[in-house]
Image (cartoon, rainbow, N blue to C red):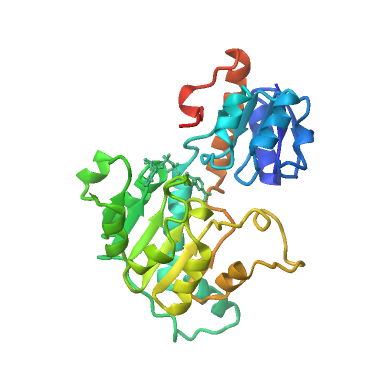
Length: 335
Ligand code: NAD
């Protein structure tokens, strides 16, 4: 198949090229993201391969459909950036990689929480300057703390299990469906309100949907425990960043670990070190001592990249071989 890949980073190309030795798709790589201004680059490609910050709104979908695209192959799990109704109306199939390495994201999330709680990010900076003072580095044990996990799918279940069975925390969870394996190890499902009221650490692992957008906002933060830690490795818009910043500045929120940010699109996946970043909320957040921000990196393990490449190219091969049919569990449709 002729495939146009958007938002290509060197590590994407390396893993896709390696996997493509087994498929021989005709792949063209674009560094640029897909959006209204770049949609013409998809012209003549029956398949486009996109990532988290490519924008596939109704206009883009109409343009690519008119230019011959029949399959949108997401090389990620989330699909909030695709107008699925517009894709269905245009006769375009949308597929994704539902579970490339949930371990990659879960392990990274644990790393963020432990770093923040034990101030490892601050200690690392001090030691680089030969400052071995421990003053100001007193942390908190996680053992015995209450961890609230919102969304216990592939990633959230691993996070919940690690905190509950590995670190001796009390895990409370909220999801629209309960995972019996988690219940059997002692995880308790509670309402979202109860979770926010009781958790010392809130970890967000649900998809970004209309009803989860700004799940953490000024009102919901008011109901949280003083000192609560907010952890987001899901999608940026699960958190109202301005409200989170207010909560941190007032001292009510004790810390935040963010691998995603609601206005990350013009920032992440590029080197802006010589530029002026004009997003004041973001700039303020990254200066706070009790905040760790990383640039949507939780997925980035070698195992995950290989798995993403293999599943994406398999989806495309199935689409070609089976006259437009892809493994059902990898298809995304409007609900
Ligand atoms: P998943 O589909 O396996 O699990 C999502 C869970 O959220 C499901 O159990 C679902 O029932 C639940 N859910 C749906 N609506 C909910 C609601 N309103 N309230 C509470 N729970 C709800 O997905 P996953 O593979 O575990 O990934 C979770 C999210 O993590 C993805 O949607 C994606 O946005 C994000 N993600 C981020 C990275 C990263 O690099 N930071 C990488 C992969 C995935």
